[in-house]
Every structure is written in C-alpha cells, then in structure tokens.
Image (tube, rainbow, N blue to C red; front, side, top):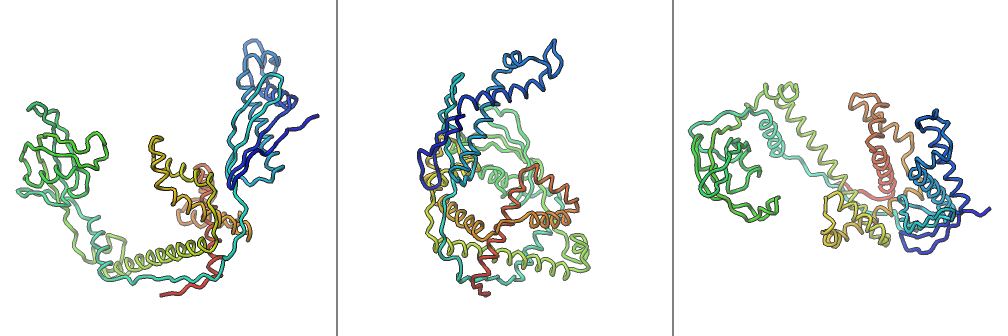
Length: 415
C-alpha cells in the first residue's frame, strides 16, 4: 500500500518547501473517518441520533466532510514531514497549490519557516560595567511633588485667565457662512495636548464667561490626516476654570499617601523605590550590552524568511496598512535583522545548554505571582493559559536562565 510521499524541493537558510502526495486510499480513509464523526453527531428528521445512513450524511455534510478530511491528511503529512526531514519549524507550515480531484491522490506544497542550525563561537569572557546612578534629593522632591498633584483637588478659579495645567470647560462651535453650528462641550487640562495649540492659546486669553470668535489652524501632525493644515472659524465660550490646590507637605499628607508614620518615612520609601528602579535600569543596560557583545562575537546571518516574519509582526503591532508595508519594511529591516540574530543566538544557547524553563520553574513563578496578587495559583494559571500568556511567562523565565548563564561566565564591574 503506497505511503504519503514527501520530497523537499527548495531550501534556504530559515525556510524550506516540500511537495506532498497523499495516496487516494489515505484520502478515502480520512473521508470515512470524517463521515463517521458527522454520523455520530448528526440529527436529521426521520432518523435517530447516530443512525443516519452514511450516504445521507455525505449528501448533507459534503463540504464539512471534505474540509475535515483535508485537515486530517494535512496533519498526518506534516507529522511525517517533520520526522522524515528532521525539521525544526518555528511555526505551522503554509499550504500552497492544493489539488484534489475525486478518487485521485491529494497533492500540495508545504512552505515552512525553520530555525537554522547554528554553531556558536564565543559565549563567555565578556567585560561589562553596571552603573547605578545615585538618587538625588531633587529626584525625591520631584516624586513627592507628583504625589501631591495626584492628591490635589480641583478648585474653581474666578476672575482670572486660565494658565497651563488648569482644567478648563469650554464650548466650541464651527462657524459656517457666518453662523455658529451646534456647540460641543469639552473639558481638558491646558498643556496636555488634548486640544490643538491654537485653541489652547485662545482659551488662555479669556476669563470665565467670556466668548470669542477665532480662526484656528490644525497642526501638520494632527492625527486626522484630512484636517492637517486646515483652518476653521470657531465660536468659543470659556465656562469654568479649575486649578489644583496642592496639599501641605506634612505628616498628615504622609499618612494619607500610604500610612507612613512621618514625612521622613515617606521620603525614605520614595528613595528606596527610586533606587530599586535605578538598579533595574542598570541591569537592563548590562543585558543590552551583553547581547550586543554576544551578537558581535557570533556573526550569525539573519535568514530572509525570518526577517520577513518579524517585519510582518511589527507591522501588525503598529497597525501599518498594506499599502505602506514596503516603506515600513525598508525602514525597520535593520531592527528586524538584529532581533532575528539575537533570537537565534539565544535559542541556540537554550538548546545547546539545556536552559529552557522547566515545569518546576513555571510553577514556582506562578506561585510567586499568585501570592503577590492574593489569588489561588490554580486560578492564575488558568487565566494565563486562557489569555495565551503562559508561553510568554515561559519565554521570560527561559531568557532569565540564559542571562544568568551568560553573566556567570562574564565579568561585571560595578561602578
């Protein structure tokens, strides 16, 4: 009995193409399996569930049976292709040039992206410097001021023109042929960029209750492309101005912010947080430097298919329309190539040195996160699995192990 025939027809770094021929007997067997599945589930008038004749099932569910059979033979073919050709795919294959006629073999092509085999050279002996900047009193004061702004109530201002950081309430109406249209009410904080600059400038010339007619221009970088550089005549009324009243910087404020015993205790907590953040930033810079040195020491070529894949992912993340993809890809290609090189090197290290995060590692991290969030570990695991973030957690843990492995073989100077 003939078997599924798979033949590699093209190969380049990062990709391969394979032709597949599935014998007619295998196709018929897949169709029969699909028919039995539909038969066990189908409910048709005049028949008990599971008792509908196969011929009737094939007539009523022809398209579904055909699709299920096709998925069956593609799945079986892909499994054989991976084993036969010792493939290391990074994603599911693309199926092209499908041909299927009744009673004949099914033929198609697999186009698949592959992880190329790498032989790494230097992976140790890198010299790195970890610098943690000293936290200044000015930085602590700035954070304190930001906390005061968060707690500051908005207090109405009368008889004064608004200024930057004031909350204003205005109505705006577009003037068409000398007549204002329907007024629209808006509230925004001056200086935050929620209104176009010309509107903000005119608002700051008014006192509450005043009205003015003005011509304003949309900036050249306005999000709505059709309005860029356009002018409008508007009828504007300033109704209300509110200004934040900062709370006193005293012991009562410290207790309100976080139940601190004193203002000094609050300052100490802010300084500790800033120092911790500075330490994380320093660690990130060390990792970036380490990756750059590692990539430079191992001249890995970024395979074209993997670069194209990365560019497609970038374009989807940024919402780039299809007509702009070419321009976008040309600009981001160096970034994609660098990312592919780094990923290939890290993946090779994981495989060659057994650094993949284990189930024990994943369970321990979920237990840690669950304890911080005060939720059961099983519930958090289910949430991560449902939102498809479990793989991201595993990848993050694996990268941590890779960096610990690399850092243990490098010299990190503190300074």
